[in-house]
Every structure is written in structure tokens, then in C-alpha cells.
Length: 292
Image (cartoon, rainbow, N blue to C red):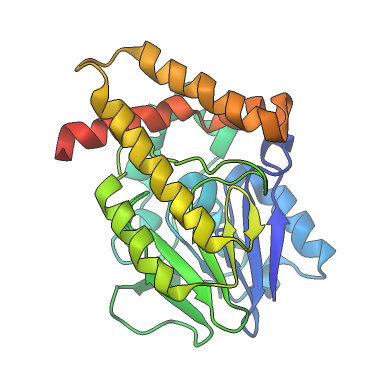
């Protein structure tokens, strides 16, 4: 059984989710940022659990909104194993470069948004490489590069749920359009399109996204994200060969308007104040400069 834990990032419901599974002992997929640790503990306690009861943490990737709390959890539970893609494991053990990169994006707001990032001791890290066996029989890792190169989705074979992290985009409501999260510096639009084509064979009954929720329209959302990624790439490519901030600001305003029509102005404003769509424009532009 999969259980969605709303971490209420900065007091906002429906922004960041973690997922609790019993396979057969309790594990978390993407524990969220360190600033949500108190709410994570509350959500666990509501289910009769504490951090000490967890067996493992499975990371889809190491962006701080997904993985920033991991080192704190290991500090509270020395027996916790942390399962992560081999390419990301060094940054889990030593997050200095990761934090430095994140600070470049979020500036002075970094600590308020994400909090302190603590290293995970090497003895707790379990490295997964594509082509190797799954760490748990019921939880199958699937390489899903695109949002970032080391992205991994986790398929719960028992319940038919694909835990996607950001691989299926941002879906803030069943009626809301998919938003393609393409922040610099790791996005690879071509790899992401290949991922979206490849994962269709799994055809899960449901899929879970970190931002935000569990849905049952996998094929429709897969196609929608593919189209949204292509549209953003075409739009950025068609723009002038300059870093005119007005283009990113226009995309930001349009994104907020589209989402607000479904989720309301306040929630859209608060969500995109943190996960600014202008950063997604900039990430796609950087990708095109590097690879197109």
C-alpha cells in the first residue's frame, strides 16, 4: 500500500509529497527537504510510526526538495539504508557541491526554503546502477533521465504504482495541466523524451508525482508532458539569441495563469514563488546552448 504524506512545505498544502510504503517494512520514497522534517515526523506519527521505525529511504534524485532531509533521518536512525543512483551517490555522501549549485538558483532564500543539508555516511548508502538487480523484490528501479541525468523511478510491483519523482512532471490537481520542470543545470530534453517513450511499456495502474499526488491517467499524462516539453523547447529555440529576462517572465506569468485557473491564485502564487517557472525557461535555454 502506498500512502501520500503531504509535507506542507512552508505551510502550503499540496506542494511537496513524500510516499510511505510497506515492502514489507516501512520505507520512504523522497523524504523531502530538511525544512519539512517536523511535518514529516507528524505524518509518520499519524500512522503510528517514527523515524526509528523506517527501514530505508529511496531517492528518485537528489534535488533538495526531494532528498534534503535524508542526512537528518540517518542521523536519527543509524540503521537506515539510502538507495540512490550511482551517479548521485557521491553528492549524498558529500553535498557541498550540490548545495553550492542550489544556492546559485535560490540565493538568499536557500536556507529558508531547504534548510541544512547533512551528509549521509557511506555505510548507509546503497548504490544502484542501471542493469543491476533491484534492492527490494517488490520495488523495481527504472532509470528515467531527463529532469536530471541520475533520475530513478521506483515501481511498486505489488500495487502497480510508479513513483515518478519529477519524471512525469508537475501535476498540482487532477484538472491542472502538466508543467514541465526543467531547471538548470541538469535537464536533458532529448533524454527526457526518450524516457517518456520507454516507460510507456510499464503502463502502471497509478503513478505518484512529488508535486503533487497520485493519479490514474498515466498514458494521457505521459503524452501531455511530452507535448509540453516539446512546446517549451520550440518556444525557447524560436526566441532571440539573447538571455532577455522578459521572455522567461512571460513564460512565468502564463504558467501561473494556467495553473491558477484550476488551483486558485493563492496556491499558484505560493507554489511558483518557490518553483519559479522562469527557472524552467532558463534551464531549457541552457540545455539548448549546450546540446542543440
